[in-house]
Length: 115
Length: 115
DNA sequence: CGCGTAATGATAATGCATTCTCACGTAAGA
DNA sequence: TCTTACGTGAGAATGCATTATCATTACGCG
Image (cartoon, rainbow over all chains, first blue to last red; front, side, top):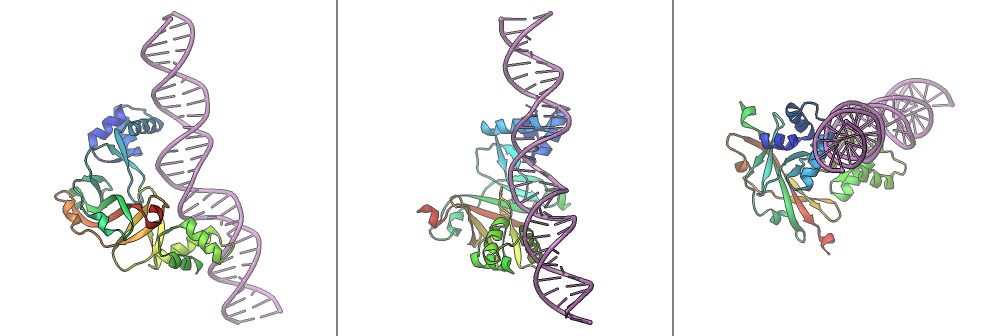
């Protein structure tokens, strides 16, 4: 499927629109509806996961086995994966709260946008 | 202003709808438009800051001088403030990237929802 | 006491991502 | 070759938060 190939090519979380644009380069005339249909089934089969950042429309990336977070470039707006994760986040929560997950988003500029 | 008072009362980030509901208890018949107008001016004067969590509609909280993050309860959906912050997040970014900010969101259950 | 200005409430309009509709084309099967 | 069922593209429809519109109201001030 062209949608899957587009995601594999960039290896970075993409918006539905961007996926549509990339997929259209491979399959001209592909409809946006088809992209959403494909994403839906890829998500259901666990091959793709949605990535939501604060104040942004959802993006989609290939499913990964390992825990990771994201970096959002203020210059180009692209999102990159970030390996690693600060441990001990649960300790920050107020007493009596149970923590079962977390999200970390870094903001700044990627190498290209610093130049 | 009733909007400001509603935010002061709960001290927790609220959605526009929730603020409207609370404010209506003080000023019956207040319109949603007025809430948005008030929020807009409060934000412009720096008294209120918008809080955006992944996949959620924006919330608004009173401006704070100190750095903090948020805890999102999976039970009641409420958002709480979290003091403190794991340092050294910039080290996680790929080489050559500059980090100038970050967001951390904890997920779990608040004391009330654990019971 | 009367007018003008600015704020207000109700509601319509907007913007946007996502989903639905549906006629059409295609490919597999008989 | 004919039939049938499914996937597709195009565009309309939906849902939702936010913003604009606009007639009305209240208040300040002359």
